[in-house]
Length: 206
Image: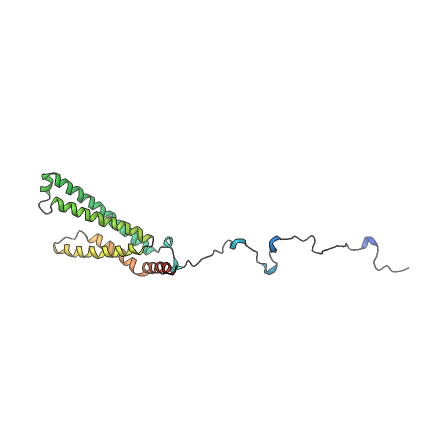
């Protein structure tokens, strides 16, 4: 009785011919299943998995107009309010001046304090001022520095007019003055000033 080291044919282990990797799933494009080659899945076109957003230099110092700080938003709203009220007052002045110029009774109602022509001229000036404030407020929200400069100039102009009005005991312009001054401070100091300076620096770097 001789020993058969290979055993019976039916007891032999299964044979695999050719490449031993047959039967294993293949991945095209060089991608490997999760857990192989570092265990990190590959993402095409630079896309990152959910929860890992990419920020391209969009920090506080490089914000665009959509990321305007709260101080700029508040200042623009205050400017819109003053501009709208000024334009509305200008319309009343224009209507009053036109009515006074066409009717002697309406002219007498002015009491000789102001002629119809002067009333119309004041209305035109106030209308221009109101429209400039509105456009400046829009420019400020878009990060345009000229809007901020225009608001500063108007604030100085209103301050001079208010000081002159105080001599005659007129305090009617104090509300508009306070609102514009507050808006100017918010645009030229703190985060408002930092935002505008960052936008200017970004434009110069291009």
